[in-house]
Image (cartoon, rainbow, N blue to C red):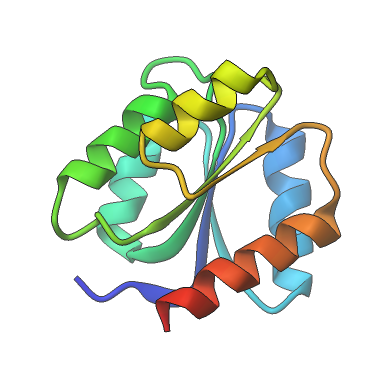
Length: 127
C-alpha cells in the first residue's frame, strides 16, 4: 500500500472538532478525511491510504488505542503516522498512547500551529 502523503484522516467523536480541524488542515494545504468512530476510521484507512491519522483516544466502540494497535499489526498500514489528540493528559495516558504505537500525543486544548508543525515534521520524515 502506498500512502497518500498529502492526505490526513481525522478521527474524533466531536463533530465541531472534526470540522474545525479539517478546515484548518485544508487551509494548510492538506486533503482531509473525517471519521467519528474507530470502525469508520479503519474503513477509510483501507479505502484512501492517508499518510497520517489524527486520532482521539476516547470514542464509542473501538477506542483510539485499539485503532492504533490494529493499524500497527497490519503490514500495509504499519507505516502510517499516528498523532493522538486527547483530553486525557496524564503522563500514564501519554505513555499508553505511545506504547500502543502512536508517533505523537497532544492534549486538548491544543494550538493549531503546533499541530500543523508536528504533522509536517512527521510527514517529512516519511519522504
